[in-house]
Length: 152
Image 1 (tube, rainbow, N blue to C red):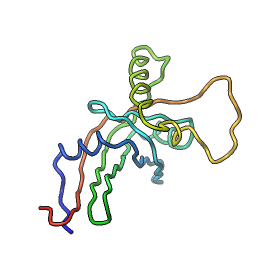
Image 2 (image 1 turned 120 degrees about the vertical axis):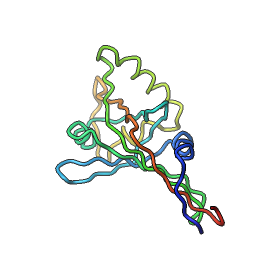
Image 3 (image 1 turned 45 degrees about the horizontal axis):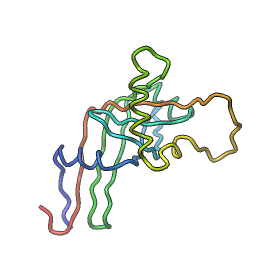
């Protein structure tokens, strides 16, 4: 097996083809990582969540990372790390509604896109209004590695 650095174009292809990432954020020196569904468009990754720890932490520290994998076997895989900034897309904010609708339109094409961000491991009460949050990760950097048999 050979492991190599990926070019930016290769990283972008992995990110564009994927839809599940591990999102890492940090608050007061404590890291936190969770799976999240995303949709890629331009220099943004659009995501959805309900209020909770990751949203609170990203609001206090907008520097975040996502790891996205393309896995064929233990000896053939690609892994990309995206670093960027959290940016919330409040639907009621002037100038943000269209971007929020764009995020929704991209995410709704993904199977079960709302589950990682919308389901919790404890019973939930039914609310008259949904407190869902759409947000964007403005991509600052992408790096990746690929492994394969005989690749150079």
